[in-house]
Image (cartoon, rainbow, N blue to C red; front, side):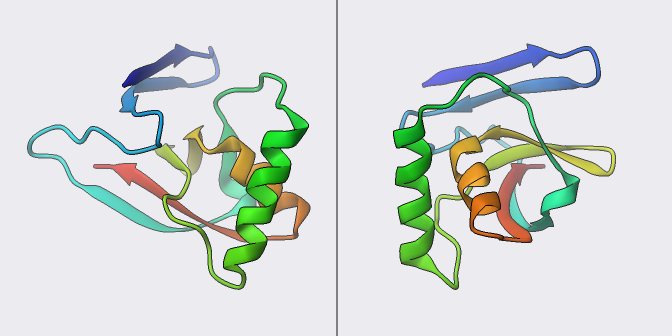
Length: 109
């Protein structure tokens, strides 16, 4: 498991434990919610460069699921009225390239 933590100045990101296979560690007493979020509300927590092959793989995965959306879905958290994407940025960028308007995402409450 890896722990994602950061403080970007504009917003802060709480600690989130994500396994290599994108499964989440959900603390006792918390629950996982999922839903569709409009692309204009989503922002990326990590702005590092992405490998073209990883985005292409995510794009093929999305096309195979169309018109539905793949699971496990990208994971993040709500910061006010914005959704900060913590894991799944390749899927998000692939979806943007394919013209997806609403993304299935998950978060812990």
